[in-house]
Amino acid sequence: MTQKSIQIKLETGLEARPVAMLVQVASQFESTVYLNVDDRKVNAKSIMGMMSLGLAADEQVTVVAEGKDEESAVEAIEKFLSSK
Image 1 (tube, rainbow, N blue to C red):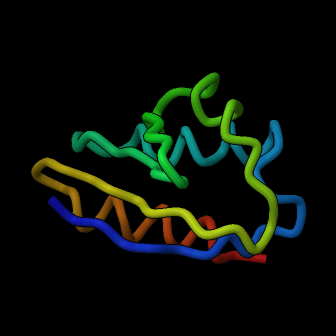
Image 2: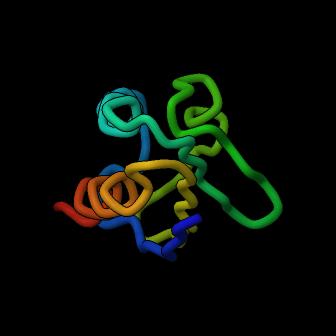
C-alpha cells in the first residue's frame, strides 16, 4: 500500500470537469485508488463518489493506492492535483 498527503492546487478545486479528469487518471491503473478526506474514503475511479467530496483548492487529501502499480498511481494523481 502506498499513500501520500497532497494539497489540491487546482484553482477551481474538484468541480465537475477536474473530477472527470481525475477519474480518468485513476482509471488508467490496475490498483485500487482511494482519496481520504477527514473521515471519508472515496474510490478515485468513481465520478459520483468524487463529486460527493466537494473539494476546494488548497484542501488536503490523502491518496491511498494498493496493487501492482500503486506507486505510479499515487504519483500520477499527485501530479494532476498539484497542477495549476
